[in-house]
Length: 80
Image 1: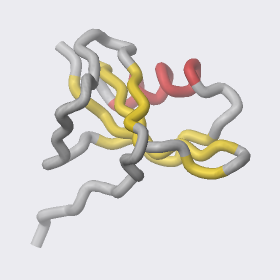
Image 2 (image 1 turned 180 degrees about the vertical axis):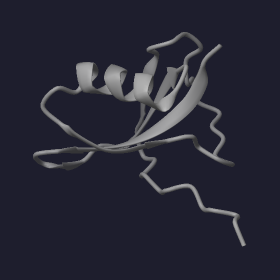
Image 3 (image 1 turned 90 degrees about the horizontal axis):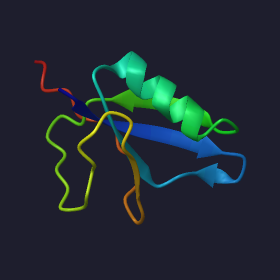
Image 4 (image 1 turned 180 degrees about the horizontal axis):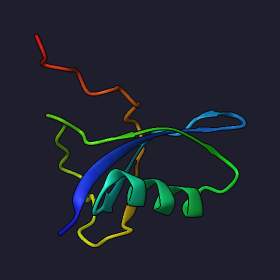
């Protein structure tokens, strides 16, 4: 079963829009992203917390989607 991860990716010209990837875990998500974006910096990969999208985020391991118009925002921590 895959989980949804969101990624903050930076190119030489600036940040990409929000990227989602389906993977079994964070390490696998990073591997998929590094293969898909070999010239870019994978700044952060995390589970999206409460983030939801009505866009297609894929369903199979390795499904990567760019969400134009959506900027990266780190999930907020609800720890007190």
